[in-house]
Amino acid sequence: MSAMRCHLFAGILLAAACIPLAGCNPTGATSSDGHSHAETTHKPFAGTHPIRVVCTVGMVADIATNVGSKHVAVTSLMGEGVDPHLYKASPSDVSQLSKADIILYSGLHLEGKLADLLERMGRTKPTVGVAEKIAADKVLTDENGARDPHVWFDVSLWSEAATAAAEALAKFDPPHGDEYRANAAAYADRLAGLHQYAKEQLATVPSDRRVLVTAHDAFRYFGRAYGVEVRGIQGISTDSEAGVKQVKELVDFLVERKIKAVFVETSVSDQNIRSLLEGCSVRSHQVIIGGSLFSDAMGNAGTPEGTYEGMVRHNVDTIVNALK
Image (cartoon, rainbow, N blue to C red; front, side, top):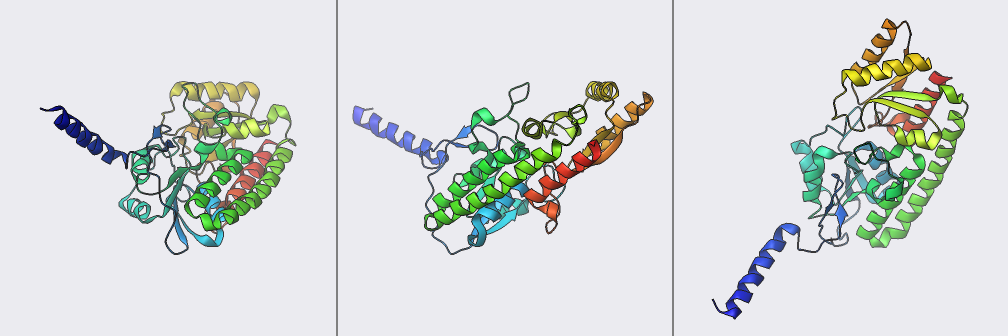
């Protein structure tokens, strides 16, 4: 084969290799599995408003609604009581994502089973993990180095996710960019007040009683931000199994510390929490369920707990009332 033909053949192979990578124009986007992936540089919005924004979880949908305001129509795939760690897309979800103008998800592996689907969608339309824009040094990890996705439990961090959503919308819809940024700033002001409310309320609980025991380890950011000692039966993902050893260790902890209340989560089975209560009862230490907390999903749409701010207030008030 001549040198000219060799060069031509190599060029054809290179062009073919670029096709699966959405045009070989990577921007270093990060998908919900926490790894960097190539992504197409997408064109700005050229359709008619409202922009169709599809979000994975309610907390992200709340950001999109507040930041996008009248310019967006927001759909959330997961509603009340849905566990995003275990969630698998239905044909209806795939249809919704395909029709979206822009997709916003939380990320940091929260929607682990949707990772491949979100990556594919990112090749044809803006697909942004808002929590993945938070500075890496603020993100917690577990003993295995896995990043903890539950950043919304530190209200000050969730403000940063709102800023990321505003920038994504501004990039996609430049004529309304200033409006998205202004909406995000107003939302951040409200969240600053909520952050302070959480600090003040939890400070009313004596420090030795300020202990939060839940079904899975979703509240570490909450503990760090508001001075609460946090324990969970399962790890940061409900995809992990809770063993007899973990339950026994927590029973020992509750008995030794004389902790009187534990909490169930609306999106997680209460089976393991019930095991804690039974284990403590055998040890002649009575523990009650202090209430039900919203962890990975918000409440019903149309209720106060169906908003991010209402969800946080509900959790803070429930924890404070039980522990005091």
